[in-house]
Amino acid sequence: LGHAGITRIKMMVEKELVDGLEVVGPMDEKLEKCDSCQLGQARRRPFDAVTTRESRRLERIHVDLTGPIRVRALGGYYYSMPIVDGHSAMAKDFYLANKESSTTLAALRSYKARAE
Image (cartoon, rainbow, N blue to C red; front, top):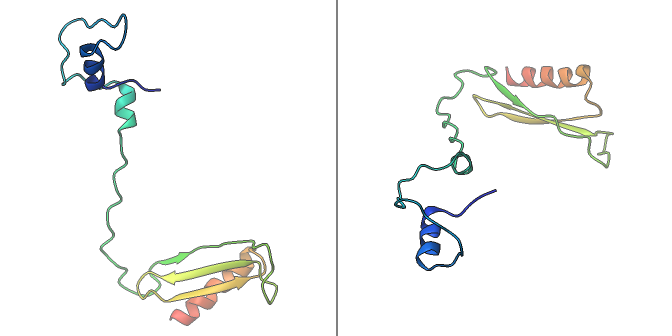
């Protein structure tokens, strides 16, 4: 899935390391890269740094739901749902027995009541 670069090919030609390798025309350092080379050297741009914070509580919250864990926790909990407020950074981890919508909604409502 690759090939030697122009510098390596020049070296192989100069030192006669490859039998039957013929170079037609001048070998120029400024040769265009092939599509595979361009794709192989492509890099994803970094994400822009977030510099603005939410201006008030509960404007944005960050929620994750993890589980089920293999061993049930005390109280019969299999899931963890951390919630963090984007403005105040107030964090609370809720432990849930299941991930049904009624259970997660109850945790969100509890968090909202604490944050207000």
